[in-house]
Every structure is written in C-alpha cells, then in structure tokens.
Amino acid sequence: MARQEYNRDRVELVEPFQRSRLIPPGWDKNPSSWSERLPIVGLALIGFMIAAYLALYQWRVLDTVWEPFFGEGSRIILNSRISHILPIPDAALGAFGYLLDAVTGLVGGRRRWRTMPWMVVIFGLAVGPLGIVSVALVIFQPVLFDAWCTLCLASALVSILMVGPAADEVLASLQYFKRERARGNSMWRAFWGLS
Amino acid sequence: MLWAQVINACLGIWLMASPAVFGHEGIGRTTELIIGPLATTFAIIALWEVTRSVGKVNIILGLWLMIGPVVSLGYGHIAPVINDFVVGVTMIALARTRVSVEGRFGGGWSSLWRDAAGDRMGT
Image (tube, rainbow over all chains, first blue to last red; front, side, top):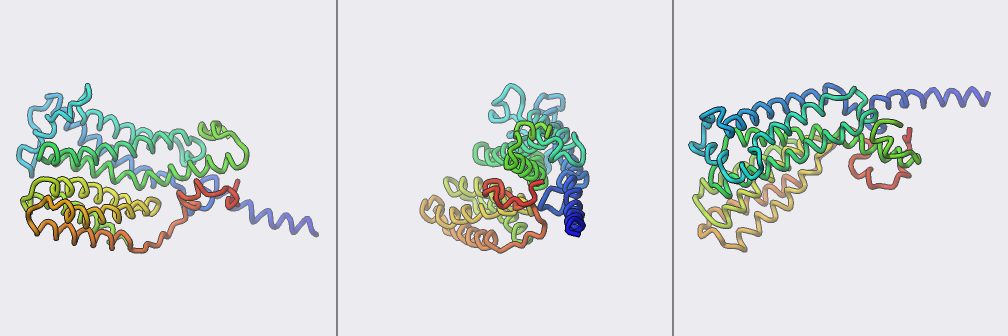
C-alpha cells in the first residue's frame, strides 16, 4: 500500500523530468527550439549581407556605396582611420562576426542548451561583443568624423536586435552548469555536453 | 511596459539628432552623441523579457543627461540644456516603470549567483 503511494508520487515527478529534457527546469519554453533560434539566424544573415556589401566597397571591389540620407557620410566613415585600424577593413570583420553568429546559431539540436553548451557559449560570445563593437562604432562616427553612415547604422541595429533573443539560451546553459556543479559533477564535462 | 522601452529607444535617437537640430558644438554635443546610442541600445535589449533589467541602465544615463549639461555649461544655448534635462527626466521615469515578466526563466540571471539550496529541480 505504501509502495503504491510512492509509485503514484513518482509518476507525477516523472512528467516534469521528461519535459525538462527539452525545457530547462523552471522555464516554460525551450530556448533552443528552432522557433527561438531561426529568427536570430535570419537577422545574422541580413547583417552579413549589409556588412559584406560595405566590405566590398572598402576593398574597392565596388566603386560606390549606397547612401540615401547623409551625403558623403558613408564614404567618410568607411574610409576613416578607425575603419582601417586593423589589417582588414572593419566591415569585413563585421561580416565574419555575423557569419559566426549564423553558424553557431544553427549548429546543434533542439536540446543543445544542455547537449552542446559550448556551442551556446560561443554563440553568446559572438553575439554580445559584435553588438558592443557596433554601438562603439556608432558613437565614433559622429563624434570623431562628424558624419553618419546609413548602412553602418542599419548593421548596428541588426546586431543589437540579436542580443535579447540570444541571451535566454545562454542563460539556460549557464544555469545547467550551475546545477551540474551543485550535484558534484564536472563543469568541464558539462561544458562539452558529456554529462 | 514595452512602450516605455520603445519611447526610450526613440529618445536615444532624438539625442543623436539633437546636435544637428540645435546646432551646438563641444561637450554638450559629445554627451548627446554618446548617451543617445547607448540609451537606444539598452532600451532595445530590454524589449525581451530575459534581458528586461538592462533597461534600468537608462536611469543612470538619464541622470547624466539631467546633471551633465547643466554643470558643464558647454552649450552656450539654453535650449539644448533644457532639452537634455527633459529627455533625462523622461528617460528615468520610463526606465523605472514596473514591468511584469510573464515567462519563467528558472530564476533568471540572479539564480547564477544565488545559493544552490533553492535549486529543487536539480535533475
């Protein structure tokens, strides 16, 4: 009799456990689902196209650059010393960043917040700093060169829009690391999805 | 509230345009061109529930707008100082609006540095 009661309790406990294989404990949605991730990948691809176009101008594959609002603004910004502070032009670096966002956003299944946390962490590290650099460049544009660049602003907006949606998956992985450590498991193994 | 963050994002863009609108130079212009993009960024990030608390940073930026231009007197015009003050006050008020987070995020970011004792769903 006591045993039956025990089993009934277990049945109720099993259901949330199975849900938690997709949905993190204490959450009501799965941050690694495709409906959460594909919009971010879409934004990353838009950002990639903008940045790649600007990089082609900076490399002079294209002779002109589209600038509907600020006259000479785009040309001043894209040829400025800040843009060429590194061996490759800044838009090329941005294009690489967006591509990294898209790839690390796509790789891994619907449970990757716990089966492939390292990919989620790289994804977060790709999205976050790209946003920071974009905003820094938006500040530099007018302060240093007194000019604006429409497509640079559009690119910055795209990179900022990705931060919020990307953050929840990172949070789920970090909480997973913490639970694993609380249970005495290796965080190193958890990071590589081995536990 | 979402609209509060949307308005703050627009206020940031208004700040970016302000130097051209009022035609001022110097430290006031630089202040607006730094705070504007930052305020818009934090407001946009705060549109998502899991990063909603990021919008609170605009309280600090709003204070800077209220105090900075008045102290530095870098404007020479009264209009931009008043503009920045009003934008700062509005930004603080909107950043402070109480927001209800509907989704559950396993205790959120603070769960990462809270004691693990509250972690009942350890599986």
